[in-house]
Each structure stands twice: as C-alpha cells, then as structure tokens.
Image 1 (tube, rainbow, N blue to C red):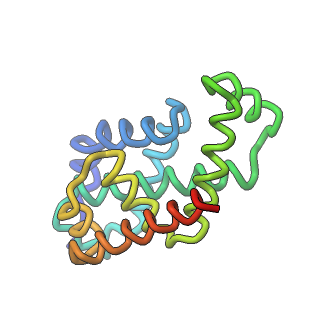
Image 2 (image 1 turned 90 degrees about the vertical axis):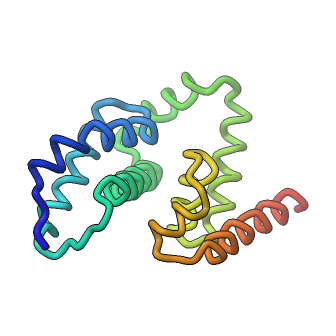
Length: 159
C-alpha cells in the first residue's frame, strides 16, 4: 500500500512540527526534524503499511527528535554555545545539571523504546492502551516496562 505523501504532508505536517518543536525547543531544528520525518516516509512509502497515519507520524517525530537530542549530546557542534544556552535557559543550573545526569543514568539501562513510551505516557498523557497500540505490545507489557523503569529510578534514589 503506497502512501499519498502530499496528502499526509498537508494534513499532518503542523502536528509533526508542533511535536518536534515541543521536544527540541528550537523552531529551526524542529522544521528540519519534521522534514526528516517526511523524507523517511517518502523513502519507505511503498513499503509502509500504516493503519493510523497520525499516530505513526507522531511516534516517528518523537523518535527523530530523540535521536537528534542524543546526537546533540554526543557531538555538540559548538560546545561552548551549547553550554551557554543550557545555562541561560536553566532556572537553577545545578538542579538542571543534576536532573540531566539522573535522566541519563536512568535511561542508560533501558531500551530506547522505553524512553519513548515513558515520554508518551508520562509527559504527553497518552493512555497505556494508546502506547501499547503504538508499540504493538499488550497493555501489561507497557505497564511492565514502566514499572521496571520506576524500579530503576527507586534504585538510583536509594544509592
């Protein structure tokens, strides 16, 4: 089943851009990430079999943005500017630094998809059923992943 990329772009690009902007907090980078999502759809268009386009694109945008964030952390283009920006937007630099370090420690032990699941459920307010549907898992499977994540958080808090 082929994808009508023009129709998808016309209908869903504003939603994808909003999602990218929310995660990346930068309009220019969000626009680039949105384009990356649709380039991937074009590239895989003939092989895609998508039941719910909006859910698929939302998840794809989340993954593209999380990959960009990870890449940014590994290879900052201008390290000094990135540090200045982080300090400028942080209400309390020490708290933000500690929070970022804790998040890195928490998610380093998890599958990448668990981070997306946690984002969708805990931050974006998706139900467990919606998350399960997106990842082709049972609700109990998603619940188990989030429970394991919470256990790892508790372990880190105790140490």
